[in-house]
Length: 192
Image 1 (spheres, one colour):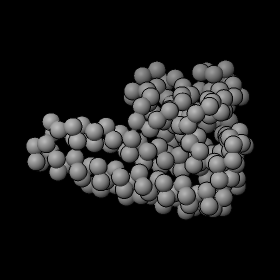
Image 2 (cartoon, one colour):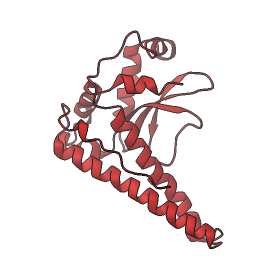
Image 3 (cartoon, rainbow, N blue to C red):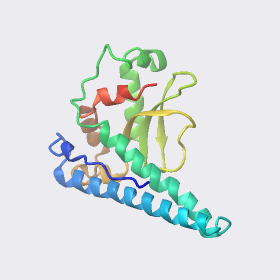
Image 4 (cartoon, helix red, strand yellow):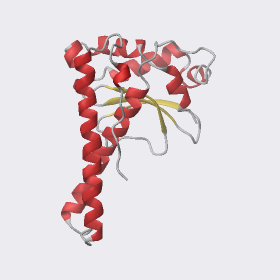
């Protein structure tokens, strides 16, 4: 089974994100889909040929995590955009933010602070299904740092490709635009 890149063209015209930036970002995402399929095909062939003990097999297995998570995190990112950024104060998360962070405002400050850290990566609001607790985490690389078993609820790409064309080094301005475009219905649909 091959993965197919999803169409996120509906996001073009979103306030704070130029068409150039979005189209470049979509192209990058499509590359992750293409590479995920290529790596999976090669690994499948190597398995059939009995080449699982080779260094090439091991390196491709490691590479698969990078390509697959790059594909999936971009899908989750694009799918939690396109809204009007209006947080539903009677939604599923409304009671969780005060419980886990003290208030919505404290959660937002923590999430934005995490996204503003120096470096490249992702800022992700996760839910730990074992406890129900919400956690904001920094993910440095696609294939590492994901908390085992946790569900990503809100994903913000903070690699330079997500904002440099429009914002240069002004990451904080990008983060504000991101918040104005969150689709909170998509985020709440991910809660377990």
